[in-house]
Length: 132
Image (cartoon, rainbow, N blue to C red; front, side, top):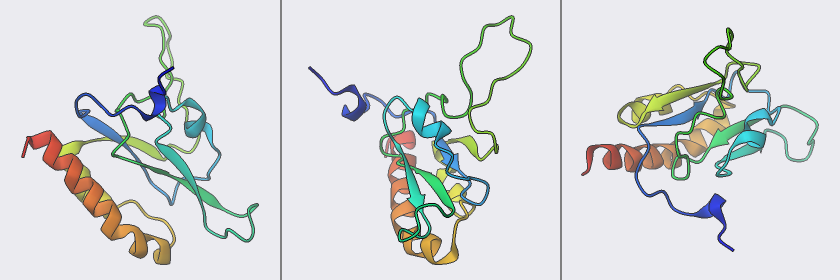
């Protein structure tokens, strides 16, 4: 049986999810609905798992389905049912992902240590979007 959650994407999405770590509480709501398991929880203090955590997206696996932002709704539904209660997730076009890396937030030590990896992933996705 195929593992659909780890199959490579057939084509790059137009947009990928970006989580603002300063708004995220690590409630796991987005993790539960992600069909490709591209969202992971980051604990600020691994030795104290009950303290603040936030989530992070693996853009190389994100398919741009938007399920982490809002649940699908019927056209007659008068309100939008959001997944993230803190409005920490937004969809960003691949061409704007590099600029979004600067606004991801999070603890300063973690953000500065992860910036090279985040920037490299954003550059990979931007190159897929432009076909170069």
